[in-house]
Amino acid sequence: MVERMVSLSVGILLSVSLLHALPEAFESHVDPHTLFAVLLGGLLAFFLLEKFAILRHSHHYEGDGHGHEHGHDVHEAGKSGWMILVGDGLHNFTDGILIAAAFLADPKLGLVTALAIIAHEIPQEIGDFIVLLNAGFSRARAYVYNLICSLMGVIGGLVGYFTLEHGLEWIPYVLVFASSGFIYIAVSDLMPQMQRRATVRETIPQLLLVGLGVVIVLLLTRSMHGH
Image (tube, rainbow, N blue to C red; front, top):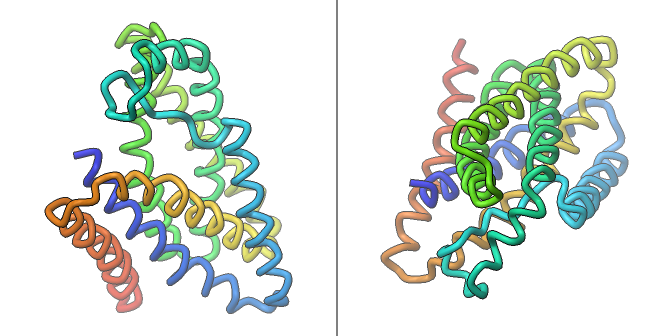
């Protein structure tokens, strides 16, 4: 199920970025050279955030097939359990701001952006939960802390709505930055996970699910255009 969500997320993230968020930003009156500079800066920023283990966390766990020595992942999770919670909270807060920015720019774009983030968050939260268990958290504590981290998305949405509403000229920049994050996550994190399953039998469902993600975004947008 997690593997299927990863493939679906790739289709949604890439289509939201390349077919909706970026065109929406470039249709504004902002200089395209400036927006491309923001896109480049965003990709580099997400790379650095990943380097410092703030944005993306290690989701490997004992028995994941990555060939670590016995006890390696439990040891790493023990050191990074609280960092995972901090990073997840910051990530969700940022996601909330991005969803608010997308809704302010265009309601249909907001809906597909929210869909993209939800599709990405489901496998991520499952991975985080497993890592927290390996870090020594009880199931109850892991659930509660994950819930608290999820609420940071709501707070981010409120902050984004009330701050960006008074600075609508910043929305094209925010959309480009959000797109850089979606593209980076899809290309550097999710697609490499898909590449680890290289047989034809596993590749065909992946391609179908990626295509389904693209179709979902296109259908949602077309149906809302009809209204």
